[in-house]
Length: 293
Image (cartoon, rainbow, N blue to C red; front, top):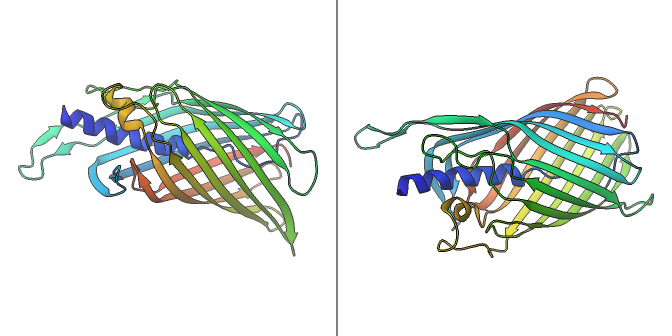
């Protein structure tokens, strides 16, 4: 039982890390009939995690791989629809071997299913001006698997329906031949099924180089749990161990346009501190079509 609960704990924290890293950021809606489409592969593999005290503990090597389709499409010049769909999510655990006897304690296994899908709307509160402001509503659908594998401890979703309300503001400007931008956001994540609500904050800055063919950006994301979810006496172990995740992370991304509208991207994110998340960096590569160009 203790081993099963530990495996559930480890799986839940990495899924929370991956879901929390998916943000519809920036105060710039797509123009009507224009859009941004991206197919990407995101992954994290880790053998250590942050505990609820912020300490690092070892665990059996675990990995999550998400093949996702991300879409932004302008319904009007101020209203954009957003879809983030992990079309294939793989969660695996290696064999658990005894450190003293070398005995196989738990057989490693994996599942490959649909992940939790996010749907949203972004509305530009301002029209024009030097500092655009936008409001985004994202809803997370529990379309993933919450108890896969022979031990029912592999997951590609958290099993809850959540809603994130986010306010973004930013500005764009030039410095010499470089196009620059900066933005920030504040958000609130309302969660269901016994999960704790969250406050979210972030800053982002970027630069377009070589006639905007290469874009480099950096992000700071902060998630703080209100720790108001159910306790062990009133919820299942899966919901309990997915609660109260917190982190501060930094990420870097590079996007290169191979043609006017088509490009390639690569990113890296790493937690600076955390509670109940994976203590390892995540990576992503993708190909995109930018219809706004």
